[in-house]
Length: 359
Image (cartoon, rainbow, N blue to C red; front, side):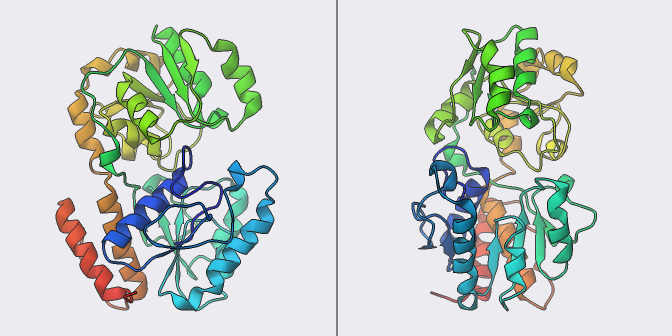
């Protein structure tokens, strides 16, 4: 399991790719799979950890990213012969290593940072295996084995039937994520707003967010798992007013897991993740988002939670086991996944036993 090295696995606060890697790794180990996790040395896992990078580069000032990125990838692919399969979560660069080893590589594409990286994905299309995290994020030039939505450990999220009065922005402080839109919508709807997340664009924060902070608009910074649970569950609604095509949106599902409905612009995967009128409202524009705030009380928070429960870690793990089987086996793919999570776990364990070497 090849993880990014921007943050620890699992991340202390922010780090959506690393969070998914952690949930998948732990689920595979629980299913009986022999997993080696390639991540930073401070990572925490029940799998075997192989690390040459001492700490995450986002948390370590002065760490030369390119140097440690090269060492990280060389460590993983240098051991390729020891594994049946390499699962890449490190974006496009590992593809250039994958063709140099005999071990098959499956790559989860967590989104495209820009059109500039597509030549690499195109060059290795068909020579490695791609998995998308939403149907909306599929690029027409690429061939995919499957779409596998991210999953959550629902034990980390507490259902809150009685929310507070505030609206919540939960994500990177960056123009793409629409923090400024959230401030304007909350003000127009006469609701207090809490903003949580890392500041990824300092200039944007200083121009568009900081001048509005006060009693009605609070910025609480990045938050850890326990604070996240309280903050998400206590919100009247999550404002996810994005200005890019969101590949998936973990924070959206995390909010819904607490029973908190989401107001989002219908870009990227939002129509796949949110059930309009059930677990949230897809607003066409800012005025529509202001109107949607007035409708939040009409959404049953138990239905919001129920909708979110289709995005379980168990289902994600089972879907990846099917994908691994398809890569490693020349026979037909296994039958479609069953809805029952417990049956999925049992099937996953059987697939793991069949296709992976025991420790």
